[in-house]
Image (cartoon, rainbow, N blue to C red; front, top):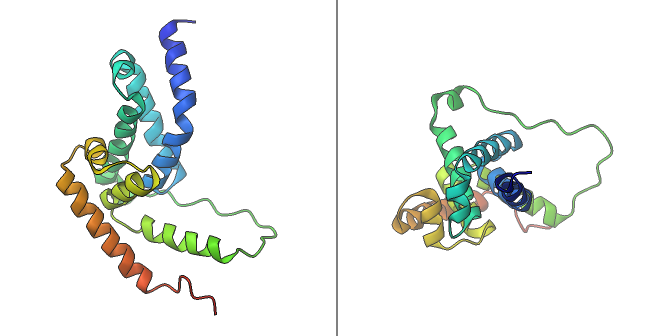
Length: 169
């Protein structure tokens, strides 16, 4: 097998799980995450010589993925068509504990954020990237990252005030 293909294959296998989790968290649904990843990996393979020489090839592809998701949100067709979550199969479901309920409530609030705010929150608190790394990933200034994070946290606090998170009575 050609060395370029083997190198890319190794990169793909090593990075897919992490980038999928990030894409899913930013996009909010599996289909959009998979579409964005597929497009990003196609673009990365087409430019593999440049991507593989980058200081951080995974960060390079992460930027492509996040920009693909955010760009999709801007396209007109996104306003008309939106994937719907797959229904859960019927069956017996165990009662969730309070931690799961709280996690779900927080996740629902994060998904309700505008796409760029959601991307900043996911990259900061889920991926643990610095403001500088987030700015590089999103192609914006650190000030924009700070303002988007502040707006997102304000929205999350406002939404949390209306929830009964932590109320175990």
